[in-house]
Length: 131
Image (cartoon, rainbow, N blue to C red):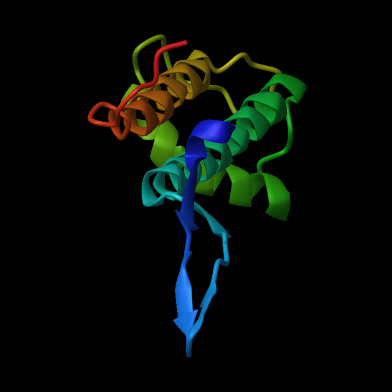
């Protein structure tokens, strides 16, 4: 990704030392990642963690995982916050049986779109070079 790099060059020439004129050329290059790119990476990371958690929940639901298990209860409890806005759209999930939880699938799609939308929103005012 070349567009996330900023390069600065500093040049010095024609120095006078006593009666002698010295011609020197010094070039420094500094490369840094812009704050917009860092913010985008944070947004993608947080969105990716949420989506991965929802996909684990969806997989556990499909396999009919026992909610009494500590790990399964932890995943259901943590991901339940993100699925809650979408519960009731297609019916309630049945725990302990193999079940396709459509609200979790809808949540994955919606949070994926929100993640991409927020990340792209940061680049709206960024100048775009012609190809």
